[in-house]
Image (cartoon, rainbow, N blue to C red; front, top):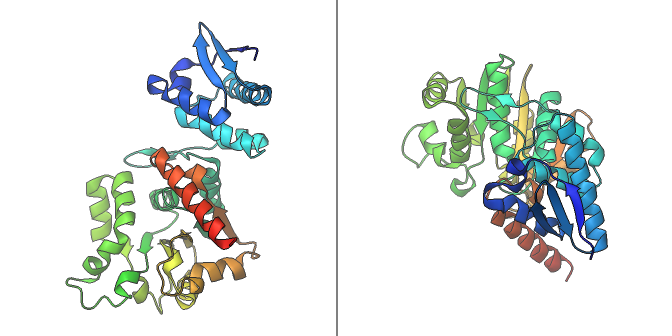
Amino acid sequence: MEKIEYPYIRKSAFSGVMDKNLKKLEQRLGVSLSVRGESLIIDGPEDKETFAKYYFEKIKELEDKGHSLKEDDFHVVLDLLEEGLGHRLEDYFSSEPLSLSRKTVTPKSYNQQEYINAIKNYDLVFGIGPAGTGKTYLAMAMALSFLQNKLVNRIILTRPAVEAGEKLGFLPGDIAQKINPYLRPLYDALFDLARLEQANRLIESSIIEIAPLAYMRGRTLNSAFIILDEAQNTTKEQMKMILTRTGFDSKMVVTADITQIDLPHPEKSGVLHAIKILSKIKEIAFVHFNEKDVVRHSMVQKIIKAYQKAENKHRNK
């Protein structure tokens, strides 16, 4: 087919290291892309060429408006255009990064940005989606941001210890040591976002509190940022209990991967029940992630897709 020459946009950001980004976009767009001088050559089926040209026009519009696009941004733009959400591009690129003591955090997808906005604007937010979509990491980043800006006085991290049946007494050590293996992902996010000495100081002073789900009954949590991680492994009773602990000036984020329920009876998952009965309450936000939000190795997206395909095939039998 006839090749299309299109004015080229900043090769350094677009191509990526050793043209890896260029090759990824070729696969996604279904066309051949090559650089010749100051032009980008697009070659492929007519319908694919048309969409690719539309895509690069949007890229150029964003750059002309002063947006400095990073490698990941090219894929976010494509995600939104594929989903018919091109009108939301400006919303995504106008979002402000979270500046924390150790690093600055920016959303890597539109759903991640929606998640951050939901946490800012709602006191209870459910982040539902597969592993690697940033649910826990971004919740921790927002918790540290709220603490840094004195919007809360403490952070409470909790997670159901399914493997131990919430009966932690037989494990050695204090509560923190008993629950530590189950809260490791939260710790990993914390130590990645905050300086080591700062994180340890916050934990030692109980400003960041480890709160096993089994020990949360009867408490009222005021001026706290509460993160319930791996909520798919809560029972209905546990979910009701933790949701009703929220006190004045507090915020709660519930993260869950409903494809990885470890309960003996997965259908009794507290988060599945909560989604069903709370979804119509306008003061509660539900943000759903998918494989396009995965920020780990690109292979993880393919693994998630493969499992989803297998599960859908099984359901349809």
